[in-house]
Image 1 (spheres, helix red, strand yellow):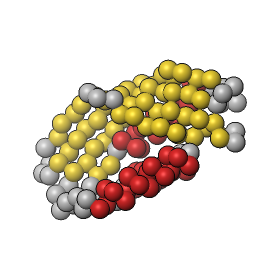
Image 2: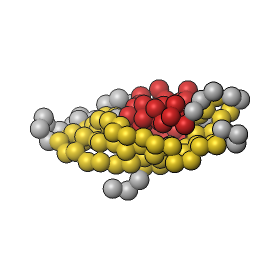
Image 3: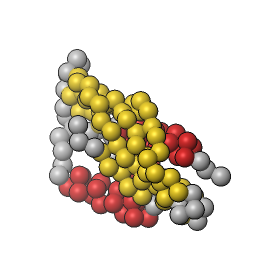
Length: 130
């Protein structure tokens, strides 16, 4: 049986992967996480990638963010209903262009889980304003 602590650990790993990307990775961070998402979230992820590709962002100049989970806690967990909400506090390092052009900031993310056919899956991802 999955506990709130188990989900908090899973959410930390999910947040790190989801929040780390570069303009040269073709949204691999999101595509790789789709196996952990509900059908609703997979549809959102597919749409997000299609829309982002349509914007044709510049890739000649590197832009990326590395996200590290600092802590996570279950804000809500109901095993009977199969619903949970995890708050993950992260440190994010943004890099653009030449080496040394970095900035670090802290940002929280809320990850909502639902249990589908016995498996806990991500059903919502919400970055919190800094």
